[in-house]
Length: 224
Image (cartoon, rainbow, N blue to C red):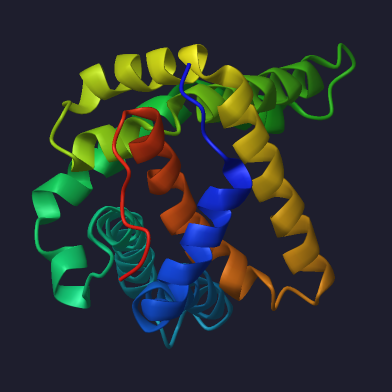
């Protein structure tokens, strides 16, 4: 297990965020606006904004979010990045998307079936929802590093799952502490009327790849 200082990584993430705030914050805000607000508005005024446009907005929002993941990785590795670099390799972003879809497939099915059955006398719907959420948490905890293994070129979609699970198992205490610190910052960001999330989420997009690079033996960027 490698010695990794979580607070030091957050400090480095903050320094890198300060230099790349326009890129990271821009991608974060655009992904939220495009993937959530536009579909929501479209659902309310579907006659004005047809469903194909709503679906297109959702797809564009997902692409923007994947670009944020890639931008965060590039910033963590080399200190700076750009909008062009974030979108440069669409096939790589699609691989990351497929990775997330694979991890979320089983818990997603359980939660959806549970939602359909809810409420039921046998409480099967509730059990399925809880089971789906637990599985989703476990897969997220052990599978967090997969996208960075793909972006680094070290693994394909399926081998990234094994690499992520192995890396997390070998450094479980450090990864779990990093997750707790992220949850704590999200709570603080939410308390401040959600405004703090505009800093926490972009910072986390750099912190996670910094953690990955540290655990795999690379230092990553300390400043731009």
